[in-house]
Length: 247
Image 1 (cartoon, helix red, strand yellow):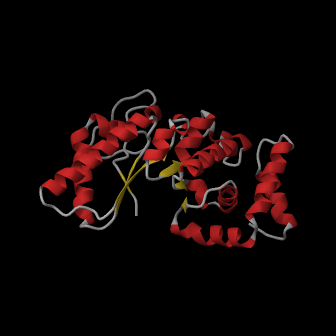
Image 2 (image 1 turned 30 degrees about the horizontal axis):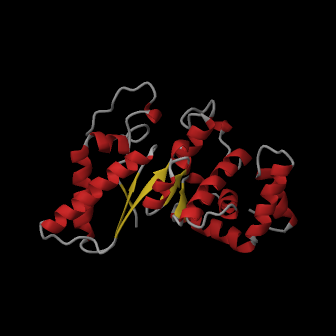
Image 3 (image 1 turned 30 degrees about the vertical axis):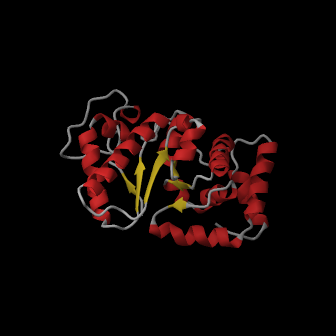
C-alpha cells in the first residue's frame, strides 16, 4: 500500500478548506505545492502515517512533483519526522520508501540525482497527458485531443521507462488508461511492469495480456511509428485481429 500525501487543488477539493480563486487551477496551487507552503499540515500527515504504520513498512508518495527540489524538500520533512518520532521513543516503520508521482513533463527531464534518490516513481497518466497535449481534461471541446496511444506520447513514456531502468528506479503507471485493456497492453509492451487500476479492470486487462506476446505488441507499435501514423491504436487492433484475439 502506498500513501499519497495531501493531493488537493484543481479538480480535487475539500469541503472544509476554502478554494483559492485561480485563473487556471490545474497549473496552480495544488498537491505538494500546498504541502511545502503549509509545512505544518504536511508534517501532521506524515506523523500520522508514521504512527499509524505501527512498526510495519511504510511507503509515502508526493503528488504533482514538477521539480526535483520539491521532492527533496518533501523527503527531508519525512526523514525529519522519522528521526523525531524515534527520539520521542515512538515505534517507527521497519522500512521506509519515499516516492514521487510524475505528472508533469518537466520531472521526466529532472537530474539523474532525482532518479537515484527516489525509491519509486508512479506516472500519473491523467495529468501527464493533460500537460503533454496542452489540453484541459475537464474541457469537452478539447478532450478528444487526448490519445493515450499517440505515438509521440508513447515515445515520451518510453524515455521515462528507459531512465528508470538505467537507475534501477521502480516504476508504475497510475490512471484511467491503465485499466483499459488495449492501453494497458501498450504500456506493458513499452516496458511498464506495474499498473494501478480499479479492481473491476483487473480481469479484462489480465485476460488480454496473458493471451499475447508483448514482443508482438511492441513490433506493432514500431511498425505504426515507421509508417508515420499518429496513433498506435489501429496497428494494435489489426495485430490483435490477425492473432485472433478480441478486446
